[in-house]
Length: 396
Image (cartoon, rainbow, N blue to C red; front, side, top):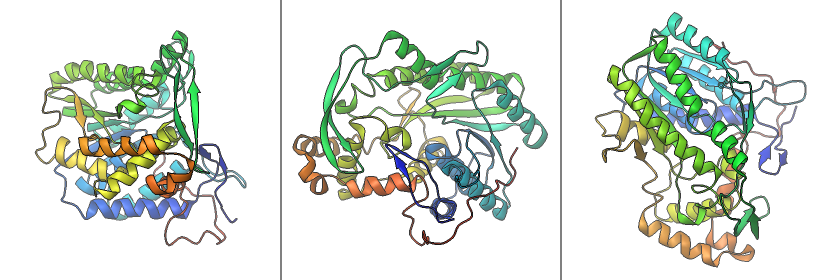
């Protein structure tokens, strides 16, 4: 079949296997061109098929020669329906890892469930012995609690008062004003349950209890803080409440892992185009302006560049993670540089529909959005007949 992008709001309902595979190879090539990483050895990535989780797996495997296990919840192709992008990404990763002689397995299922945790632990015992790095990078709108059975749904809303600001339809470039009503206490509770640190804590507790965490093991989860302009909808909103919980979890996990000489961190990353960020009002317009400014200043980084820098400058190669004594690693430091933020805010105040192409990087935003699904990739013939059915090697 000929696979073309089909969008519905901030979601693309199709994905292209060859486009995804080529982008995976580009990330691998980038990492292999950098200085070799001194670690880790055996890595578990929970939420491994897209974004920062996928980039972490690539950095570990092709930067350090690490063995990796990826856990993710993606769907295979069915009939004329393509697989999800994460499925194609993971298939391409597994193939490349095998060609490199790297050991790897992919576990497909609900990371929130006890069943998948048990499957993962059994696999580690049978094939890896222990893991010395656990990356937690799960992004989901819903979660079913494995003990109580309650299903939670997250929302993207401010807390306390309504929030009004500019936003942008990145498909059309139209700038408009949006008002978002505040979340209820129940919506805050449920968002924390989905996006907070409880499941991360459950993973580490079960891995530790099963004896599959190596002495000195590291675990890291990912977060975002951003500028004041996005705080009402992000850092001070429902998502921010969940991220606060995630950061508190890092402190608790660090204490637990200390008995093994281990450590826990939250890496605060820069704003990038993801399915999640595309769904947040205000954020696409901010990212578009940020992209233009950071590219002009030659400071822009994509996912794989961020994750390699995290590994090379903070977690390994003698780096000093969170040298300020906190459990936050600030690799958003280039985004939050004063000169960058002053220029972004100057443009923000002037932005309207007519001047978006001049003041922001709308085309860069759109390209990165379609890249998430394997489209607009250089060197791929999107008019060619393509088989959407792709198997993931080493799938558990």
